[in-house]
Image 1 (cartoon, rainbow, N blue to C red):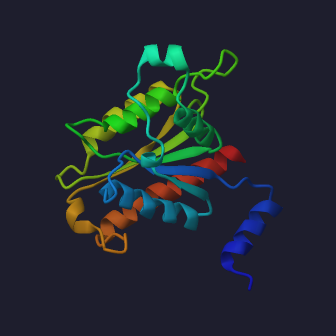
Image 2: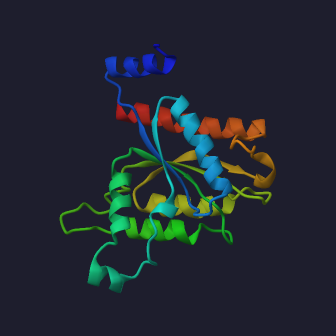
Length: 209
């Protein structure tokens, strides 16, 4: 059976358009994380807009705390190398970032710190980040939806060469808005997340040709 999705893929191939490749992940390792639910919803919206989306769980790539002495003695940890390879394979990132004490999580910052390091002298600086694009989201039980953490994440990513799109979503009262299936009960939040996901795909299409 020829589906609409197949027809869209064939149309992109015919027109010479690259299919955007987006890596989606949450800055949390908690199994029941609201931000994992949020990024899964956003990933589906990006797929519906025509992107190829890979969902990644940082829990599958544990890393030691960044330590310059450890790096000098042993080089990059294997999981840092794996993550770097995955990030380099994608055009963009969709990150759902929890807010911990008005900033980002330790696991997300530690991941960025390790992956930002060069594995060899001939590897370009910030190879996994420079020139990539990111869309930011957050969810929190609080009234601001994790907004303060996104301010810090935006600054960090911008300083390592990532183009961070201006549109973002912070979903408040996260303990009330998610359905058991992972969907969003709140239509306004669902529309916002979908708009950001589609905006990322549209931006990539324009810049990938």
